[in-house]
Image (cartoon, rainbow, N blue to C red):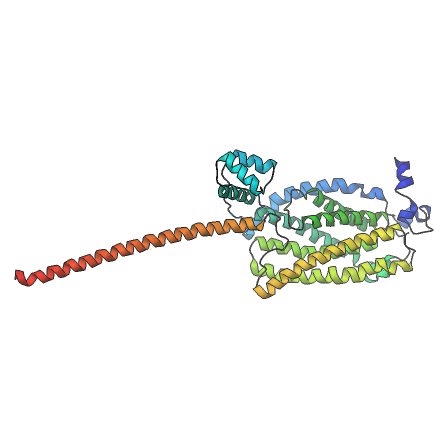
Length: 402
């Protein structure tokens, strides 16, 4: 297996610039540590460790914090127990077609409207609670905050943090510091844990884009480490973490219904995101990998593959920037951020219909109460009029009696 990998996967033309061999980049112990693929073997057990730590964190810290901040879960109408409908919901579809609704109505002896209402209530029953979404956001917030702080502290004194040409000086024979090696391993392990948990996390409208983002990020981190693009890779991770901190903190405040603070923080996040992802990332990072790097070596497969992954990330940045600008537009012209453009994938119509159904019930009760009140008032008026009429008749008889 090792021979096969060496002959096929680890060919020098894939990972190294033309004219450079693996022997040329070997380092002695006093020269430092050269990044090798076996360093990334720690990321898989680390991903499972992140999942276990997240489970403990959500129950010991996140849930009590959500209660302290006033996060409230919506009380939803529970669907009635109908075994045939439950079986269809679990095994076939959560949104049956019109023909399926007719067929289910015949089997269960229910009207089509009741069948549709049952499925709407059942779908809303499975929607994630605000507490679950708060826990997810708080976990990511803590990691991004720690990763950004540690990454900035380890990079601020490096030469390539201020001069991007230093990313390529001496490439590919560049030793990697121990702190940057673990920075890579922790980031890759975290994104791997997110990919493993994607099926149980809150499913949003941009679910596919999120999966593509996680996969592209994992490939980008892994490939950049094996190709010794560590200096550029650390800058990419630091840029992403800077705006993600603000995004997750804004989500936490949104679920806690701290509206003013959330809206203000969202504006700050939008500015940071647009500057870092649409200006700094393409203008500095992508430019240095596409253009500046060619001053130090000739292009090879790793050069094209690494830049292709960066461009995939940039395409996702443009997509998310479009969603953010839509929310900024609503904030400016409507006074508040109405709804997260990346809200849950579950149909928003379901919840809107449930709310309208509650409103209709309330309105019908108000109408019935108004009708009862009007009848009572009419009855009271009739009683008063009758009393007055009787009083006048009595008064008219008094002179005759005298």
